[in-house]
Image (cartoon, rainbow, N blue to C red; front, side, top):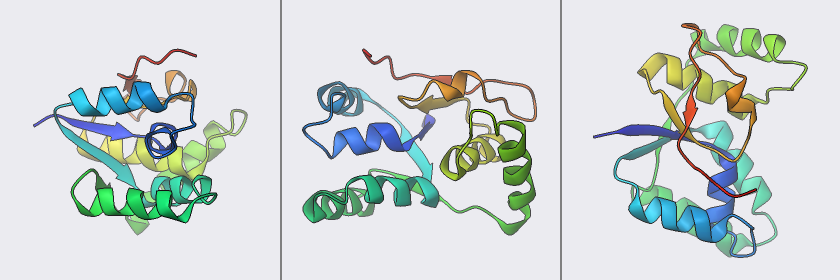
Length: 139
C-alpha cells in the first residue's frame, strides 16, 4: 500500500466546507488509494484552525479514529533533526508541524505529500530530496 504524508492545510479544508480547497481535497481523498500519514503537531494545528466549530473538530478526530489517518509519533532523538531543520529554514520559516513531516519522510522513506503549502518545494531531506506534492490544487 502506498504511504503519503498529509499536511494540515488539506485536512483543515476537508473539515471546513467554506474552505476554498474543500471540494478539491474532498474529491482527491475520495479517489486516493493508500495510507495517509501525519504527525501530532499537524493534528494539533488542524484542531486549532477548526476551533470555530467544535463539531468539525470532533468529526476530524472521529475520522482519525476510523482509520482516515495514521499518526506517527516523533521520537526524542529526532528533536535534534527538528531543531536543525528549523534553523536551516528559519527564513521561510519552517514550523514544527512541517519539520515533523520532513522527519517522518526521512524515517519512513516517504517521498510524497499532500499539501497546499509551497514550502515543500524548498525543503529537502537528509538525502537532498524534495518531498513531492501530489495534490494539484487551484490557487
